[in-house]
Amino acid sequence: MNRFKRTTGAIAACALLSSCATMELSEEDRAALGGALGAVAGALIANEAGADGWQVALAGIAAGYAGYQIGKRLGGSDQAALRERTAAALSTAGDGEVVEWASDESDATARITTANSRRETKGMDMLRDQRVDSPAQLTIIGKPYASTGSSVNLRAGPSTATQVVGSLDRGEIVHAFGKVPGAPWVMVGRNNVALGYVHDSLVAEHGAAAAEQKPALTGTFELDDVDMDEVNREARATFEIDDLVTVGDTVEVATDCRTVTLEIVVDGVAETEETDACRGANGAWEAA
Image 1 (cartoon, helix red, strand yellow):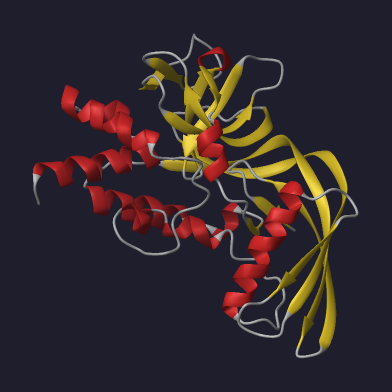
Image 2 (cartoon, rainbow, N blue to C red):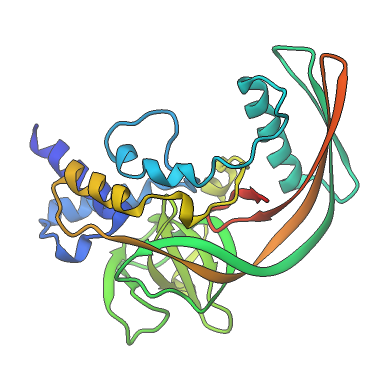
């Protein structure tokens, strides 16, 4: 394996599971690390399209999103298409508005109605680098943000008195999980793993990256569905870094929630499904 690939592998692991503080990187590697962190562009969950490289290390995380299956009588491709359409409706449709869907592969159709938009405070399971403090509360953002300063410190907690666990170059894009209520700090990370806090005066929403972030609808992410030992074991074996540790806990968050009703017709047989969905820290709608 050439040096570039070795560096890229280590950088990917560092960006995802945060062992940056214990890695000795050259200036060249640190520059590459900036590029790796900047590649987030609002990533939602570990890539389900393959299982190469760092995807293996986080494969267990995706299991936490497998619980919600709309249109159980639909084929797999129709389920995916309807889920995508439903996520778009949750993101853009007004209360009471009906969004139509028709399959490209079968005679299946659906009417999607969103209602009861509200703000809820609830417990939400989240993953973080073990060096990063769990917030007492968080107001969900769920969007890509970009650093507006040069060499912006990534802190272990929402205070300048806490440890520096990394840094962001100017213009570097990360995913903003949420803002600490009553304090000027934003928790940021990548691929569902919180990597630290940045001062809100040094980051701003990245409109271009936000536009590329497609709405997604998943099951509720639950730590009980994730084999944390396996996640860390695979990461350590893949990247040969002994101290990669990701931990999870439940955080009290304030987030947007909606009710969605689906009237689905498959082979002439109608069925109705209704569920509540709330915006998760990664930007996806999580359905109960």
